[in-house]
Image (cartoon, rainbow, N blue to C red; front, side, top):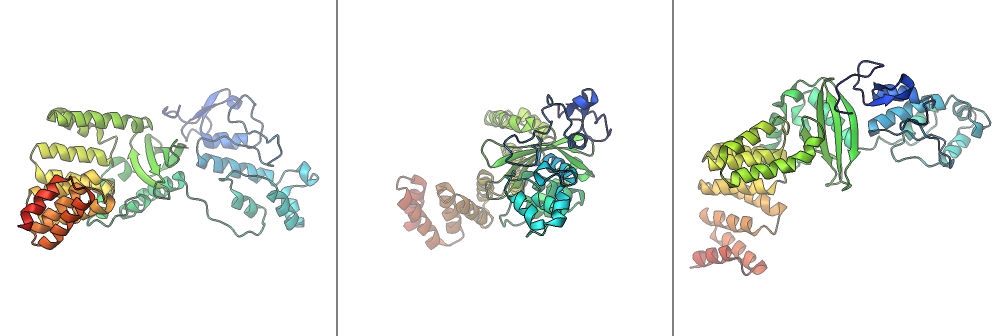
Length: 393
């Protein structure tokens, strides 16, 4: 349903997302749905009809929604009505009248009930003019996605990185990230967006937000809270189906490269960058393609892009360091090898290569110390033993 392009039959503006029994089954958008259902007159057979709490644990009915953004709007529209309606639990008075007569009593009554975590309590208290400490709207995948796209609309390309988990202080990476995102045609033309659907992943730390850009194009965003707060992980030009397709795509490209099927590799990578425009893995695979073509500078450029898109992409960082070593540029390899070490302390190949670079740069003492440390941790690691034997004589 979300992939259909027709507009809401009521407003003719927003994307239609569901049939409405009150409009003869015509497809409508979720904003128009909220405008209708706030009066609680939707037929019970509609799955989006508000449901009253039979247990009396809450004075507010439950509103099913496809995103937190939709839920917030539905709740606020309903609360605008609710505060002005006579309430049997308040002896037929309205919540608004009770608030003006005895604010403390109404506040105490409201405190007896349970509310979902995303209930707009601050909005309700403000509407009732009840004093409260106040609290900012909690961060969610949708608020982060919207902040990201607001910066896109403002063309604040250098601000986009702050909405991601890319916080490593690698030289030039912040600028490169902004440059790459600004090169995506659909984002460069962005004037308007609307959330269609959002949901959390089964792992508890991932979420997907689907949007419509410029009243036309499908766009999806994957976010992660693996580092403690919600951050943009990846964008897709299209539906969430792309997210589930990409692992198969990566496996296919890796197979092409391993068999040195270069034309098939290039076609698969190039043909999918439009749909996965900020995919670090695709740039990494393209770097491997350039490596097979012996195009070292293009390989380095794509590895840097992959790292800019994912500061924690250890394989890309290590590959860039190895490329510099192959070009006899140890001074450029060292910072990237140290980066690998900081991310994966047990990465013995990175530590061994770091020692080799330091030895080439003349710091034999530091190199020997690193090789000795490797052998203390893993006595069977032969490359370190050979290097140590070579440089100890």
